[in-house]
Amino acid sequence: MKYSLLPKTDLKISAIGLGTNAVGGHNLYDNLNEEDGKNLVRTALDNGISFIDTADVYGTGRSEELVGEVLKEYPRDRYVIATKGGSDWRNGIRDNSPEYLRKAVGESLERLQLESIDLYYIHWPDNKTPVKEAVAELAKLKAEGKIKAVGVSNFTLEQLKEANSEGGISAIQLQYHMLDRSVEKDILPYCVEHGITVVPYGPLAFGILGGKYDEDFLLEEGDWRKRVPLFQEGEFEKNLAIVEKLKALAGRLGTDVSKLALAWLLAQPGIDSVIPGGKRPDQVLANLEAADIELDEELLEEIDEILKEK
Ligand SMILES: NC(=O)c1ccc[n+]([C@@H]2O[C@H](COP(=O)([O-])OP(=O)(O)OC[C@H]3O[C@@H](n4cnc5c(N)ncnc54)[C@H](OP(=O)(O)O)[C@@H]3O)[C@@H](O)[C@H]2O)c1
Image (cartoon, rainbow, N blue to C red; front, side, top):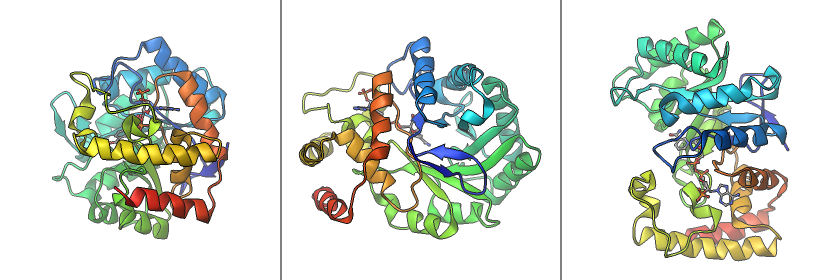
């Protein structure tokens, strides 16, 4: 496993992290049995993954609680825990106000049973609180030792620039994977220039780059991915065609498309860690192997050609 420092901290994040969206009986995915969810986190921590990603809203608090129960079993320096807040799920509104963020950080600390959160992201901009005010409150919480680093998620470039006006942002979390490269246009170059790490979410295109879906794949009623453009009729078939080509290339390299997709992200400038989700320990273990795949310029160009076909 490769590690790098989370910008502006001395915390070591692993190149492969773990996304815990599915841990905690989340309405985004089929419910994962709680003990199975906890075992996913244990599998990650036992095998070199240090970077664990959760959010207060996952399982409406339950993901943080379950992750927290597992973290207690490990020394504090074995993991870097990231969580997110600023969406008041109880009232269905986004709220980045200083008062709400302070309350949310306090509640996340309780659910995680920790004295400090390593990386705290504003999950979504609320488009009403001035970004600088929201970030200033997180800077205060950092000074108080409640969080160690400040991040934002789903921010536009303009919002990110405002958030980073004092240079205090360590990370931004955004959708980024082989089938959606929109962040490459402006956010990624800004982050590289300003020493902000980009943590891609949905690195496996929410399962499509896992390589096991075909044209007969049907999302169950209530699956949130029904609203995701990648899964819409027409778009989904185009994505599957790309995946087929990537599978052939991965086969030539002696790997599979999911590992290729993660290794490809890690080969991009500004990316230090990816946080694939998963529901089974074998998926966590398989994803770990991506950290050892090196893609040279020639292969990256070949992949580019395939991705351009979309
Ligand atoms: N900041 C935000 O707004 C935001 C939004 C979304 C996600 N996130 C974070 O990003 C993390 C990752 O995103 P995600 O979990 O939604 O999507 P993802 O990582 O792109 O995809 C996860 C899915 O990929 C499949 N998969 C995982 N490992 C695999 C393997 N080795 N081989 C084949 N298939 C594999 C599984 O699908 P099957 O279930 O079909 O097996 C799994 O459910 C989340 O857990 C969360 O922490 C953040």
